[in-house]
Each structure stands twice: as C-alpha cells, then as structure tokens.
Length: 283
Image 1 (cartoon, rainbow, N blue to C red):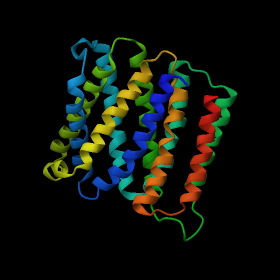
Image 2: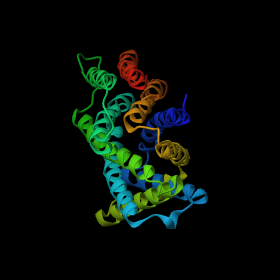
Image 3: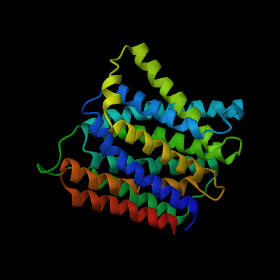
Image 4: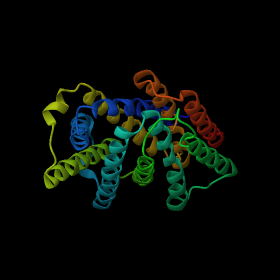
C-alpha cells in the first residue's frame, strides 16, 4: 500500500474521533469561541515545525486566503449543525463532500472519472439517502435544515480540498508553511468576526476544557498527514476524498458508545455501503 494512502487512512481515523469531541465541547462553550480557541491553539502547535513560511509566493498566499475563507464559513456551518444532530448522522452526511470533491477534481484538476468512480458515487449517494431517510417514531428527531447546512459545509470543504491538492502540487509551498498560514488566517478570521459581531467570547471557559487541546492536536497532526499526501504527485483528490470517509465509521461507533444514539446498525450499514464505494474507487 502506498504511503499517501496510509496517511489518508490515519487522517480519516483522527477526523472520526473529532466529531464526538466537538459535540462534547459545544455543550459548554459557544460555537465561535470554540472555533477561535480550536484554530488558535492549532496555530500555536504548528509554529515549532513551520518551515519556508516567508517563502510563500503572493499568488499562493491568495489561494491560501481563499481556502481559509471557504473553511471559515464551512466550519461555522458544521459546528452549528453538530450541536443539533446526532454525531452519527453528522458523520454520515459529512460523507457528501465526496461528491463535491470528486466533481471539483474532475473539473479543475483534470482528473478522470472511471466506471468504478461512477459506481462509487452512486453507492455514496444511495448510502447518504438511506441514512437520512426517516420512517417511524423510532428515528431520532432533528430538523432537516441542519442536514442541508452540513451539505453546504461539505461543498465548501470540497473547495478547500481541491485547493490543497493544487497548492501542494506546485512545489512552491511546504506542508508546514501551508498549515502555518492556514491556521493563522483562520484563527484571525474567527477573532475578527467575534469582535465585529460583538459575540460573547468565552475564552476562559474554553481554555479550561481539556478536550479543546485534544481537538487542536488531532487537527494539526491529521492535516499535516493530509498535506503530505497532497504533495505526493501520485495522489488523487478523487481517491483521497473517498478514503477519508472511513472517518464516519469511527464517528458512528463513538456516537453509540458516548451518546447512546439510535439505529446504530442501520447507520453502519449505510456507512458500509459508502465504504464499499470507497473500495471500488480505490481498486
């Protein structure tokens, strides 16, 4: 197995662990404070290993700003939604980013969509539909508007993932420099938004929560693996985005263990259908 594939699998596991942690933190701290603390700590963790930070060309900095802007909005949407829906449903719906990233990889990066890729996408869409199809009183209660919010977040994440691949493929930006500027820009954006909107800043409460540090460390380590994988010329966005979706299995299992969420077998079956699509795409 190629090293970049292993890195993406590890990224998926770490991502799956993050969703239940986010829900736990958001029980005590508001969304914007959590995002500012999360990204700010992440930036500080990225500083010691940052290399080539001031060698980034202006055009690449422009793309990093676009990437940061898309994630700025995407994460606000995602954090708002994860407070309102079961983490297992969030984890499965988050898989919809595979559709957007695949299309963007084809349109903007010239990647090809094979027959296996078409079958894979159909399985992904079917799994997403079945996971969010509610049939009776035994189903969990949540507003469908949050599902659309998650899907919109996934579209913006697809923009970011496509930019990651392009930026790293140029060879003009190191993985640590991309992470440094991304985290710095993102944390600055959240702080400015809090100040402009005069939102309540619960920083003391956030910094006392040990899970915020676990979340940030997971983000930094996972994203470093992702950026390294993106720098490999053999890696493809259309394959990477599919492998990442293994994170949903981790999230579903933790949703049951930590929050006793319902219909775990149905959710695992839906995730399994999507994972089957992943396997078909990778073969």
